[in-house]
Image (tube, rainbow, N blue to C red):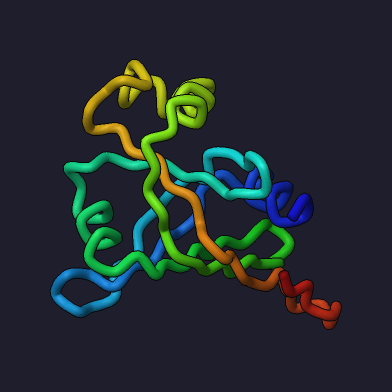
Length: 131
């Protein structure tokens, strides 16, 4: 898991894909929040379409690449949890803090990936790292 977390932290802008409520693929920039107790946590706003899409179909995929053209594809089920400790930890990110001000903001939501699975690969011929 450390290798996955390191890759996510080193490349702060990821792309999260959902199946929209209209049945069409949706992809948008996103940001990894943190890892805690083996869970990969993210946050969002419950007024956004992405939140509504994940409520309708929680199967998501996150994709990201780095400057050396290595990439990570990570998928799993988005599980929303009203977790005060995680929300407080998310406030350490100035971008999150600027958007939501406090962990008590009623539009602020956190979720983790249940049964995450994915691969880190590259174009250099290195064997993919699956997890």
